[in-house]
Length: 452
Image 1 (cartoon, rainbow, N blue to C red):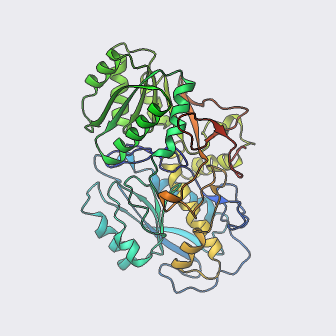
Image 2 (image 1 turned 90 degrees about the vertical axis):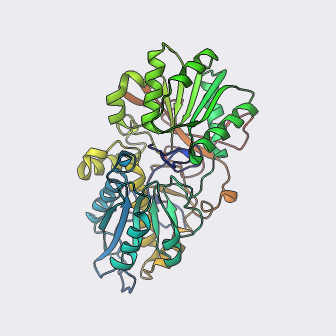
Image 3 (image 1 turned 135 degrees about the horizontal axis):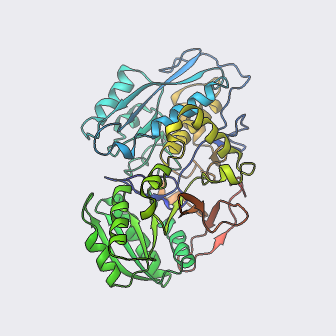
């Protein structure tokens, strides 16, 4: 159920595991846009400034600190899909506070609450953060049970991991990489991947939840438009179910490439069945599971697997650190503050969420109110988390109808015990596409794209 929800491409289709949704990409904070002003940190861009912090009567604000909260699933059967987002938030705060905070104030994750994977708990915890703990913002929402109601009513800025499609109603809701679920924007990328791996007969397998099967259904329609045979579909897989029948049917149907809209657990189950039935050589595109600990454990099952992601691939931290200084700064900070989660695909979304919040606080300046932080954030047009993702335009990403090409993402592939960039040219991480699904073609990345 791991997913990276951001996009400009498959990131929005990435799915989660119980109600997961768009799978395509994600990343972090910072911006070089004129609206967002200059930044002092390559890793997220909201470092301290010479400006006076000023006074504020907003909740959670003192002359020296801004208190925020988090709600995530830290315990229970689905905790592994969400538990790493808050460490990403905390690492960014630690990193930034070591530089003096933002406009003279430290960012403090004062209350981190656990919904235990219980859908009845979320609203109660949200009410606690707002009406009892009086936090300024909720920076770190990672749960399959997000409900926006109280946040919309109170205008509380909220940041986190979008797996339910509930983040688009309000201008104060900022999911990592964009608050909308756009399934069609992954279609050109998926078709292009199929062409690159010489797929002639594709199978699509998805969990039987809206966010998952909607992604794969969109991909199936897109493949057909490109003239690529779709030889098998199952959009109703039970979480934790038996995938042996699907694998056997795809094998009999001559499928030579599989796209999955499932969580990590089910992807591994499918890979195990592929190995068991001698289904060698079949290419796989997963939307979840690009974590080094996962690969360390299941290396033998994950060969011939590709991923579409929204952030600069971690491997460039070793092979091209000077080209991606934002990634180098992220890796250094994570190794220092949250070493368990350095190469985690959800932790980086926590970092991104924290960086966007910090950028909004910086831009708000002396007028530090919740409404102003929301307003200035929604003027940022090229948020890249300090060079970790392709530019995110917050004037568009609350409304599906406003999302426009190019759609960008990075591809990585499993090679032995490593994730390596796939299809890249001269260490350029991101591949971007226009809206043409039938004849997907790469286009120039937008200005500000890391490495471009």
